[in-house]
Length: 101
Image 1 (cartoon, rainbow, N blue to C red):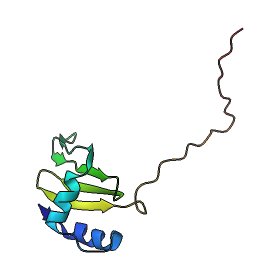
Image 2 (image 1 turned 60 degrees about the horizontal axis):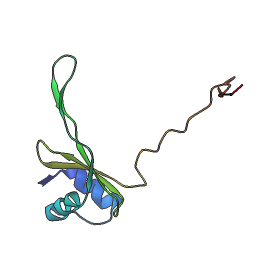
Image 3 (image 1 turned 45 degrees about the vertical axis):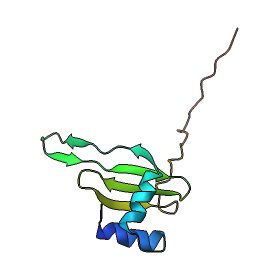
Image 4 (image 1 turned 90 degrees about the vertical axis):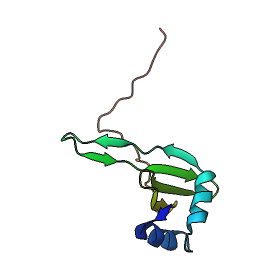
């Protein structure tokens, strides 16, 4: 497994130490796959790959790995994970209800 410079820099900034290949392999073995990497094509038929995302619940980390080149690309921690969207109620919205008459 290869660790990209971006991954190493983000790991140091977000986790607080420098990662090793063995450490990352061990974390991946203890993680849950939340999205598998795919080989896809754009509308103009140019190929691109998506990343495999691994979630480690105890460490509260998401690792993004390019499984086609076996490269660790990014790490997410709770501080920088995307926040879920808060639903906004549209103006003049009336909720529908079910009634038994």
